[in-house]
Amino acid sequence: MSAASVLDGLLDPLSRCLDEGSARRLIEFQVSPDIQERIEILAERANEGLLTEDERAEYETLINAADFIAILKLKARRLLLSFSQ
Image (cartoon, rainbow, N blue to C red; front, side, top):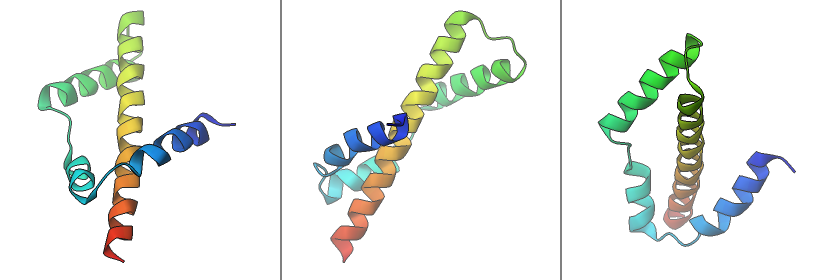
């Protein structure tokens, strides 16, 4: 079983806990400018091959969290579509 299918299986039931209002708020969610700036700094350092081990772990954590949020947002969008039908 792939990591993506495991994550999808975990988030699908969670997304069904959302009502219309919370789904809309989730879709509108954005990371803070400070966090976005940190991601960009780490991405640049990663592209240059300059990450320390601690930075690599931090960057991987941020990427995993971003993936998690993106998948949950997609599920919220699909849920909103089902509310409108």
